[in-house]
Amino acid sequence: MTTSVYDPTTYTMFVRDISEIKDGITSILVLTKDSDLHQEVTKKMQKNDVDDSLYLVDIEDQESKLISSLQSIEQIKKDLKTDCLIFLNKKAGSLEYISHRPKPESKYDWLDVAKAFKEHYGMSEADDSGYWRWGQIVPEDGEYLCLDCGYIEDLSAGEIFPVCEVCLAGDPEGPLSVRDGFWEKI
Image (tube, rainbow, N blue to C red; front, side):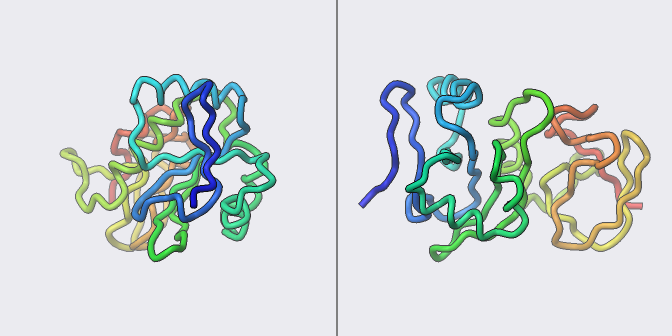
């Protein structure tokens, strides 16, 4: 039995239970139904600009079992009070946390971020220039240089390449896009 809430006026589906999410890498956009962000996402969804691994969850839905499941994930607990984009791997009926992006200071394209993460996650090769992108898995322990600002970050194998905390490279608000490679092993 499905517990999704379908909104016929916007053609969007809000999921309420983990069973409604397909196995594999997925993105969950937590937002408030009928908010400006919901309207913006709806327009893109109506243009078929989103794949089926992006799910919407209404943060104010008191009957959502999925909100309860998300609140049990320590890394995202504090960011669930506002809009956020969560990247998870669903397998065997459970959610494994990968990463998340809390609400930014200014407006940006959440759907592009979700698409880019899905493209990058699991890629085991640097780009043609030898640089790593946000969302890719760090291949080996060591220091990595942000090519935009020169910041050096010590990363461990298996972690996700982050947005640069100094210049925000890899963030839609930063100097380099979510699709650009900007980390270099030193």
